[in-house]
Image (tube, one colour):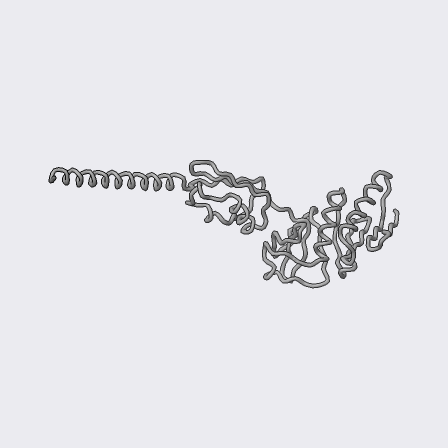
Length: 243
């Protein structure tokens, strides 16, 4: 009887030691894998790089296995408003590859103490105290002043007439025209100055209808080999003045 009790105790002790050993082994294995899969290398590539890429603290030393690339992409785009088309790729065991493109400014507007550079969706993607003049950008004149400090990079100039203007500017650029400036005197009077021609639009009409009219007229003029000096899209029947 005593021998049987000793055998039972020995068996339980043996099982307990085996269980503890296995538990220690699995904990050690999990810890090793967790450390092994920590991000140690971050590769950032782009044809045109930003001066400071923000958000690396969201990646460094994080476990690659549990890193959500979709969520990370969205967070990086928010932290770096001047970038677009971000691609985040895992490379096991401990590497992250990030590729991105820069959003292109298509216009700039003078603020009270500097200049704001705008993307096609009216987002401020850069700002400078001194004007960095370039022939690729269109100057936008507005009937009210903007504050340089409060309009930070990543914010938007959320005005309908500015959004309309930039949408038309993008369409004109895609059609091969070059707009030297945009004059927004009021929401009902927006002039895009193409040098030897002027396009007038308004926020009081649907933007898609005006864009469609612009597209049709430009295509028709290209086919016919004609040109215009004035195109007023504010009316149901656009007003066209030929050269």
